[in-house]
Image (cartoon, rainbow, N blue to C red):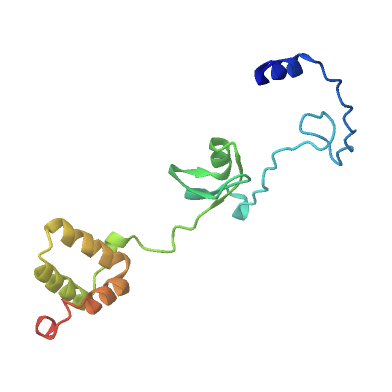
Length: 161
């Protein structure tokens, strides 16, 4: 009798089932239970200033299961309209848009413009690159000034004087 025959014989014998120990009762109801606490969507209380419904173009949408999302609405939407469009949201708040002026309307300082022109001539910027660096100058003028002034090749004495 070979090894394979002995294994087949072992598998054909029926083993009596062992009794399983009883598990302790769970302290809370299971997911499938019909009793216990039920979850419901909580809508935030909105108190507009002077009882007027305010509309905004930019909103922060808060969710319970993910990160806050910034949303743009054109035309401007009210709080109720935003929550209606985003049914999973638990709250929404308008973002104040009057804080910063658009970057394309800002003027570039004359000394920074001079640095941009000299850097463009030195590095041979294309017209697209010049437009991009001017956009950077409008958004972060001090950062661009620092970058141009610390550029090793550009800040040599004969180029900056």
